[in-house]
Image 1 (cartoon, one colour):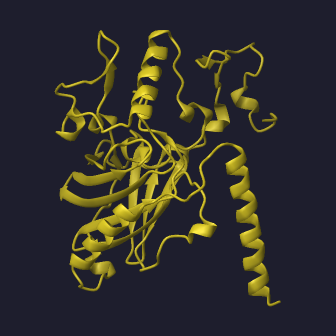
Image 2 (tube, helix red, strand yellow):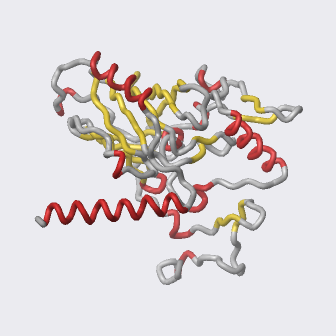
Length: 306
C-alpha cells in the first residue's frame, strides 16, 4: 500500500470513529437533504458573472466589523403563553420584525426556554467556552475581520477566535461518507461581481442567541454577502432546516464597521483561561465565586487542572 493511500485509509478510519462518537451522543448523522439549497446555489452560480476573479478585482472588506442580534426576531411570551416577536426601533429590518417559520417542535422548545427564564433558569452554551458556531456566528457582537483571496475567504470572529473558511476555488463539499458536524460547517462559494455567494452545510445544532430560538444540525444556508456602503456589509441569508423550520427562511444581517478607536485590533480570545461560569443542577447559570469549589484563580490558571 502506498503512503498516500495509507494516510487516506487512516483518515477515513478516524472520521468513521469520530462519527460513531457523535451518533452515540445523540447527534444525527450528516445525511441532511440540502438538495433544495444546493439547486438554488447552483442556479445562482450559473447566472453569475464569468469574469475571472483576481486579487485586484476583489472588494475591499478591510477594517474591523461587528454583528448584532438585533437583526434577529427577538422572541417573547405573550400573556397567554404563546411566542411573539418584539417590534421596536431596535429591530432594524423587516425580517427582524417577523417570526421565523419554526416547526411545532422548535416553537415548543423556544417557548420552554422562555418559560424557564421566567423561573430564573437561564443557560447559554457559549458560557461553556465553546464556539458560538455557524449560523449563530453571524449575529455575534464580537469583533470580526475578513481576509479575501481569489481561492478562499477567511471570516474571523474574535469570540473563541472562530474562523470560517469559505473556499472559492471551485471545490465541492466534503463527501457525505466523510462529513460530520462542525462548529462552522463546511462552506464553499463563488464571487458574483462584488457579491460573495456561500453555501454551508454540516453544522452543529445550536441557538441563534439567548432569546430561545434554535436550529438543528440539519441546517444549511445560502448567503449573498456584499458591501453596501463604506461602513456596512450586508448578508442576505436563506436558512434551510427541515427539522427546525416549516419552510426556508429569508433573513438579512449586517456587519457594521467599528471606527473607534482607529487602531482597534482583534485579539486572540481564550475563554477557558478564566471561565468561572458553570451550569448548576437546575440548569441555570452559576458564577463560581472565590472560595467556592471549582473556582479558577486567574493568576494560577496555567497550573490548574481542567
